[in-house]
Length: 520
Image 1 (tube, rainbow, N blue to C red):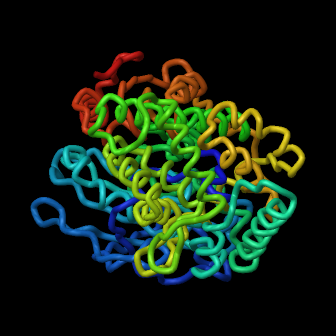
Image 2: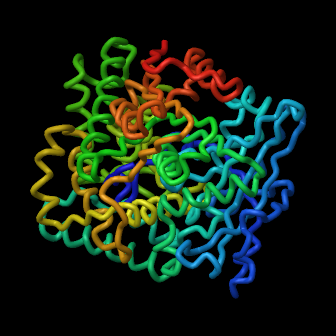
């Protein structure tokens, strides 16, 4: 997903990263330092054990709860090459989690999930969302993982907790030369910290290597084909996998689909339009509720103007947040964006805006903290660092200040509310110490099995048009498009029975939905 100044140098993460508990595994450290463990990795045996409590890098918390029927979550580590150009060199460990299929007699295989980000922890996402996939567990082992650079999988480390508190609170929409210098220096300091703490791994955390890891995972799990469920950035990862290994694609579903055809700037503008549309839908709902809505304004524009004015006031003078931390403009922008990921969060957005207007920024700051991976104890997960590292090693483009300032008008025209933040976000990789790989990822997959591609008409983070583009790029007979007319990020986890029925029929029985199916 494209970069946004709402997360400074990182992209907006999926709503599954907001208010859920994490599951983790105990790190055993790197293996194969002399190369001896790097041979025959596809045939390695995974040692599955009960999952302990997650680490701080994964967000902390308790071990995942037992599944229906009392089954427990299991965790393991898998060795992969640090550098695929040196397959017999050093290896690193990827952390995996699984829930075994209920019907072992009719088991299809493993269904591997990636919940997006990039930077989202699968060891966090799968247990928290598992009730949505209980039908799929009838015939699949549900499996997810922390991709390389994420969580327990040699997680990228940048600044410490205190430094990150300052980093995420700083002004990310500079108004004058002094603020511009502070902003640019801050990005450079962040990038330098990442290089100091994780420099050995930064060149190797990109999506292409993660796709290669998926194929090793497929083999280590004992599957002839990769059965895959990718959400948000997980669709880009799945598309790259399908391009590299088309004959090894099993039954696959892409939900909340990234447009693989758009370079960074256009992708960011498209995402900005999605968040603007989502805010307008939120404001429209508020207007239609009349006096029951706590926000001032009798039209969508009046409510938007209220939010824009609030951000301007916070830029000049932050308000009380949590403890000694204040709600800054950057945090408020984060909090608003986070609440637009799901229609269920609209009530918190309304309350948070109303309270911030009155001088209480606690709720919007809480939402911003969730976006940034800040844990209740003040520690941070590594989702922001991983997001930046993966995004910057994937994408070639590097904007300078002059280029960025020249493009601000376009961003502001798209969204008076978010335009400045998204526009300045173009600088997110400007100081990154590693070159990027592509302008756009190649997802062409001739010869692949059908891949069901789901677009949500109200999706803020991965706008609806991306699904059609992904289906077209995958190729004729491969991409099968399904439309969900809804709100929020993604479709399957919305609970819509039409979407879930179509996906379940494909994954469980191999019944491919008609291309162009519309739900509801």
